[in-house]
Image 1 (cartoon, rainbow over the protein chains, first blue to last red):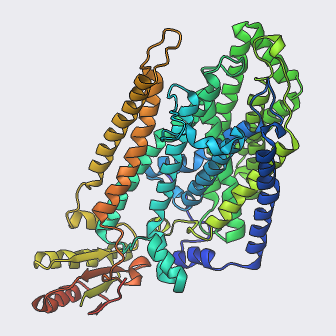
Image 2 (image 1 turned 90 degrees about the vertical axis):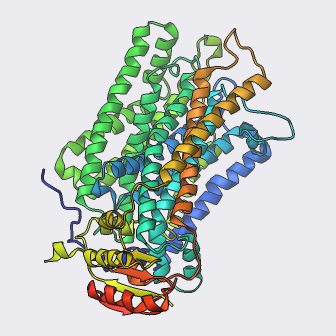
Amino acid sequence: MVMKKLFDHGEPSYEQVNQDVIKSLIETGPKYWMLLATTVGITVVCFIVPWMYQIHMGVGVAGMNRNAVWGTYLSNFIFWIGLSHSGTLLSAVLHITQSDWRKSIYRSAEAMTLFSLMVAATFVMVHVGRLWFIHWSFPIPNPMGLWPNFRSPIMFDVMAITTYLTASSIFIYMGSVPDFAAVRDYSSGLRRRIYTVLSFGWRGTSKEWHTLGWAYTFFAVLVIPLAVSVHSIVSWDFALSTVPGLHQTIFAPYFVCGAIYSGTAGIVTVMYCLRRFLGFERYIGKIHVDYLGKLLIALSMIWTYINIMELFTGWYSGSSAEIEFLKFRLFGFYAPMYWEMILFCAFVPLLMLFKSVRLNWNRMLVISILINIGMLSERFIIVSTSLPRKLLPDSYGFYFPSPAEISITVGSFAMFATLFLIFIKVFPAVSIYEVKETLNPLRRAEKT
Amino acid sequence: MDITGTFQYEEDAISAAQGLHAAGIKNVSLMSPIPMHAAEKALGLGKSNVRKFTLIGAILGGLGGFSMCVATALVFIMPTGGRAIIALPPYLLITYETTILIGVLSTLVGFFLVAKLPAWKNRPYRVEANVNRFVVAVESPSSNEVKKAEQIIRGAGALGIEQTGGTL
């Protein structure tokens, strides 16, 4: 097997890796602050203010109504949960399979997971309306003496997302401990004190590495099935109902595949930004975009197949309710969005079959963004074309997002960007020690 | 007082650490910028005890999750269409999640206990160990061990030896 080059511009030295990564943390120019101020501003104006307005006025300011009881908040929740899937899952799978190309991209991919999950969890809080009762959904004692019903798919969600958020946070943090120590050694003053605490006093002894290696592998092994379970469980929020278009056995693999698909596209977008704005061209190169591109092609084909199957089973059932739902989805008000989704997620990715497209970061950025626009549409269509077409015509309705919902959707992207911008100044965005592991080893045998 | 020796090559540092162990010198640590799998074997670091924490945590998590569901069902009895009060399929999902949740948390606890972290007290350390060098440190050797330790470290090909060393 021919080994592909991990570094496009030659292998850096060990010192170079420390300097490059730590420089991205401690050297902060005015452009960064302007960008951060912009994303914070958009988050406040587009997300926080409308949400506060909704809390003040009631959830009626959203477009959800008696027949379409779920709307954009729920579809955004699925989108962000989906986006969270590839980071930790891909990182864990590639760790277990000992793939070297993972090592320079996994930290930021895991961060994407974590922040997408946080945004997704925020959408649950926005959706429920009366935020101050959200603790009732957790199995903790409360003054009302209420206790959750564990037979409800919503409770599956609560448990799965809490577990995934906890596991993902620990996974990214533990992998960063040796790098926090590297930053500590380069810093002084308050920054040094902060990183001394964050690194737990790491010295890189054999015992510490050995223990971290075991613990990290266990985290990876535990996280892989967890990631699959989370989006399966999210799918059952829908599939365990009897609504036409939602009551489908294929929903769990459909959601998991869609999640990994949009998450992988998200990784391409994030990697482009890291290369472009943090100068990580040396560490994130052709091999990464090539492999991610191939993965996207495979996922797009699985996703397309499942979509065809979804239509086929609906049609083949012969159920008048299912056929009515299919007509509404394919030719109704939201049909243009459905066909846009098919174009962006089933046909556009085929361009990556050409190596000239796959190895070009600019083209891959455009494709990755289009895929995620398509996936956002997919989630919106799942919610907005099924609930308004339930079993009986007298329950038919219509859903269109209100300005508050549209604004909060836009704000969620700014919130994600804000969290990511903070991340790149706290965590080394590229793993220092794992990149060093891919370099020429410091062994006499290799040098002589 | 501590002794630290800095090495350019992995093999030399491992040989120094092995020599110190063979000489009966205690509190020896070998620091490196990347995991040294050869050193783990040479220093006899076999299977880590972290795995026990993971296993026990996962089992307790599973049992705890399932018990929570069953106890809830028995305290708040909700007969639904003749279905079982203790409904296994949904409870297994909760059990699965709590298995992983407590498994992960106990692995974290295991990591801290086995690696003896956090440790912010003064211990021998050199910054190069986090960049591109290997460092062998002997913590608080007795007066008759100092000379012997320095001899072993120098003999293994150390680039430099310091008696105080950098401290963390």
